[in-house]
Every structure is written in structure tokens, then in C-alpha cells.
Amino acid sequence: MLRSNNRKYNELRQIKIVKNYIKYAEGSTMIKMGDTKIICTASVEEKVPLFLRGSRKGWISAEYSMIPRANQIRNIRDSIKGKINGRSSEIQRLIGRSLRSVVDLFKLEERTIWIDCDVIQADGGTRTAAIIGSFVALHDALTYLRLEGKIDEMPITDYIGAISAGIVDGEMVLDLDFKEDSHAQVDMNMVMTEKGEVVEIQGTAEGKPFSKGNMQELVKLAELGIKEVIEIEKKLLD
Image 1 (tube, one colour):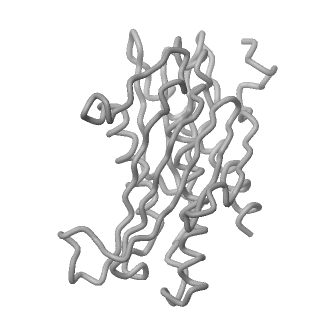
Image 2: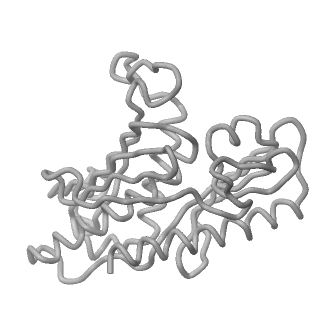
């Protein structure tokens, strides 16, 4: 199968991450994966949700949205519709779960890190790119807290990465763009730590079910991609 930019089946799109993209946020990035572009910010708030007050435990929460012309057609803003659409709600919960899985929330103490992800251009893989960009922004926000003396040590327990894999025209491919995603027979998103521990697997068949063997092969393919993603994060953060 001929892929865009002559990519091999197991090849990621080019990833570029710009740190400190928003000067006011404690942590921020602009991540570009192929033609997908997302701005991620991490903001520190010196309080926690009501259910955590008095627990000596912090929290990480995420919000995700697309600007109206991030896609091929204009979308109506959630603020105009008066509610968050189901897809955005699902993705922001995924981002929050993923980041909390690699942070010792007790070391964060009673404060909240707000993660905001704004997709400015969408060409597939926005949820996985948002997790990558958010992790780097979160790392910078936590570094800020440590340098300010507000926390004693970094709460991050592991690196985390995310990537998509799928079956397109009968072939397994890594890191699907929009064209591939739109006619994939199977679409899978995977979130994993550097230790190889799985945070989440979202796999969906279109048209007909796929075999357990195919699922295992897709997981292996995604794992290879996530290892590459984490190496990029480590070079940037080290």
C-alpha cells in the first residue's frame, strides 16, 4: 500500500514539539504530527476539586477542543452549542486518565494541573498527539513547581506515549492520518508507559470483526511506535 510521504507501514509521521509555546502557562507545547497541529498548556491551580479536599492529594484534569476550521469543514464551537460533544468529552477523559497514571498525586499535594488541548489543524491522530504534547507540557509545569520550591520532588513516575495503529486496505499500518483513518477496517489507539505497561487500548472494527491474532499484531506495532515517541520525549525533556 502506498502511504502519504512514502511512509513505510511501521513508520511514524514526522513529530515536532515546540516547548514554551504560550508564555503565560507554567507548561506549554505546540505539537505537530504530520499535518495535525495541537497547542497544549498545563496550568497550575492552588486547590483541588471538592472530593479531594483534605486528602493531601492533587489532581490532573484535561479539556480538549477543536477550533472551528481545524477540519475540512467548519465546526460549531461547543460554547455556541452549549455543551461539549461526546467525542471531545471522551478524549479529554482519556488525556486526564493517561497523565494521572504516571504521576504520584500525593507528591503534587493539594493542587490541580489543568491541561488544555486545542486542535488547530486535524489530520488524524489528534487524541494520541494531544497526550504526547500534554505530557511534555505537564513535565514543564511540574518542573516549574519544583524550581519554585512548591514541591520537594518530581511526581512523574514514568514516561508515557500514545499512537494509533490500524488495518487499511487489508494491511497493518502505524500512525494513521485522516485519509487512512477514514476508510480503515480497524482503528486502534494505544497508550503505554516506558515500562511497557498499558494504560488504555481503544480498538474498533468497521464493517466486520477482526481476529484476536490481528489485535495482538496491532498491539505489537503500536508498542514499537510508542517506544519511538518516548525517545523523542526523553531527548526533548532531558
